[in-house]
Amino acid sequence: MSDGWGGDVVRGSIYDFPKYYDVLFGSDWRAEFHFLRACFERFAALPRGRAVRSVFEPACGTGRLLIRFAKAGYSVGGIDLNEAAVAYCNARLQRHGFPASVRVGDMTRFRSPRQWDAAFNPINSFRHLLGEEAAAGHLRCMADCVRPGGLYVIGLHLIPTQGERIQDEAWSARRGQLVVNSYMWSKGIDPHRRIERLGMTVDVYRPTGRMRIEDEMEYFTYTAEQFRTLLARVPQWEPVATYDFAYDIDTPVRVDERTEDVVFVLRRRGE
Image (cartoon, rainbow, N blue to C red):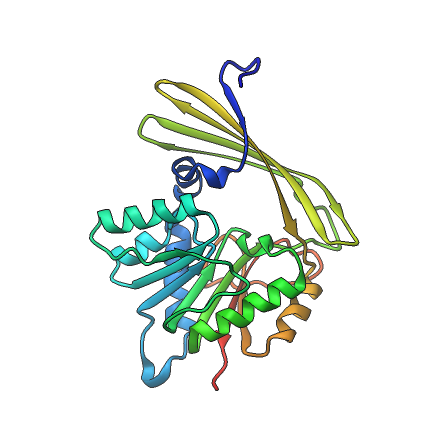
C-alpha cells in the first residue's frame, strides 16, 4: 500500500521488522551499556565478592545490548515473544562467534535453566505486561533466575500525578545508507484498566526507496506509588537506587509525584 508521501505504507508491528528496529533503538546503546556495568560494580552483592559475569535480558528484542555484553566477555541470555527478533539476535550472536543463547519465551511464565548474576529490562519493555498480576508474575520469574545478591535493572516511564507529562516523542537513527525516523504519541489512557494506547510511525529510507510502518501498541501505566506497591508484592527484590534516563551513575534521583522517566535498580535478597 502507498499514500501521498511517496512510499509504501505497512500497518503492523515494528517488532516484525528487526533490522529497522535495531537501527532505531540500537544506535544509542553506549550510555545504557556503561551505566549498567557501573550498576553491577556498585550495587551487586554476589557471594564471595564475585563480579557480575553473566547477564540476562527479558524482552531482549534484537539483542542490541546483549551483543555488547557478549563482546565484553559476559555470558549472555534472553527471551522475547517475537520470533523474528529472536532469530535476528541469535544470528548476530553466532556471526560474532557466540552461542545462540536467546529463545522465544513469555516474560510472565518462563524458567531459566541457570541462574544469572544480573538482568536488565530498559526502554519501557516492562510496561508491555498488561496488568499487575502479569508484572508480579514476571518479577517472581526473574527472582528465580537471578542469583541472590544479583541485580535487576528496570527502565520505564511513570505517569506523573503532578505537573505536565510528555505526550509524544521523536527520534532518528542511521546505519550506513539506511535512515530510520520515528514518531510516537499517546492516544489516551483508560484510567480504569490503566492501559495507555500509543501510536507510532516509523519512516524507513533506503537507497531503493522508502516505506512507512504504522504501529499501535498498549502499555500498562504506573504512578510512582503504584510501582512501589507492585514491588512490595514481590519481597525477593530490594530497591537499592533510582536514576533517570541520563544514565549518570553518580547522580541518583528521588522518585516523587513529578517523576516520569526512571530506572529502578533492584537487588535480589538472600535466601
